[in-house]
Length: 106
Image: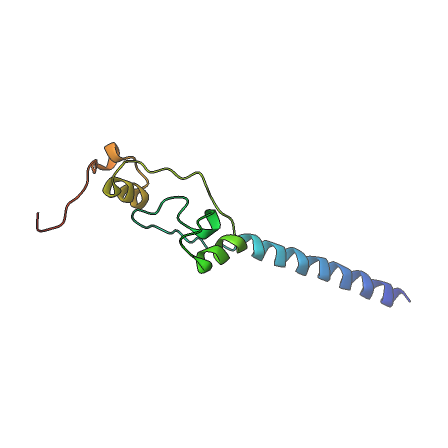
């Protein structure tokens, strides 16, 4: 009888240990982040934001299955400084791009 009690206690301890290891592995996983960057895309241009003109079923599915951040703001009124800010994590005066960068031809 003593052997059975010890076996049961050992089995319970091992099962709790496995559950703890599994929970630690789940916590270490990095989230998948999808960052959509598009020129001239207004906040109401996607159907999940209320657009009745444009259809965006794939983006709607991603938004419904995950987390949606709605408080993003552009760092500048033109795209070049904003894109540079996204890539560097700095404000336009800090990375030096403060105006539109034209094409290579001029």
